[in-house]
Length: 193
Image (cartoon, rainbow, N blue to C red):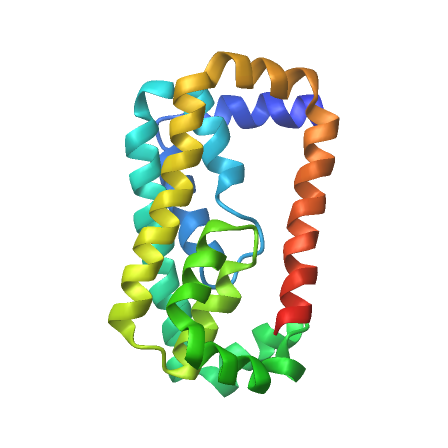
């Protein structure tokens, strides 16, 4: 089953309109969607290695724009929209103590969350809800998301064929590691918030 899903993903990744999917997932992940854009970015770069810079730029730009949407949710619609999202992910109860710490370390929190498997949407919403300065948020987001996606895409460009072979031989193991990292990010977020 994983092999069929992988083959399907690789075929879709080479489609001319795949960049729209990459942009959509990158945007949505920064404000409400639980799946990170790396899931789309990785097969796209492996399928079309020469386009790694374009894919990293698209991923970064859409993620930062999606981050502004998350920021707006936090700033303008906290009670109506952000509170239910935080409750859904289990973060609502600890948000006040998090907001206090957040105001002290905001730029660093955005940088770390933007580079790691930590659910970035929580940080974008928190940035708006706690009133983190928009220029600080924007700069930290561009740096963090840009670094993350350019490092991933650059490594795939440089080491593409061996990485693709490694992925294809160890698909089950890598899927398990991905799920553990994704869940780990949510668990860490639950205890930090």
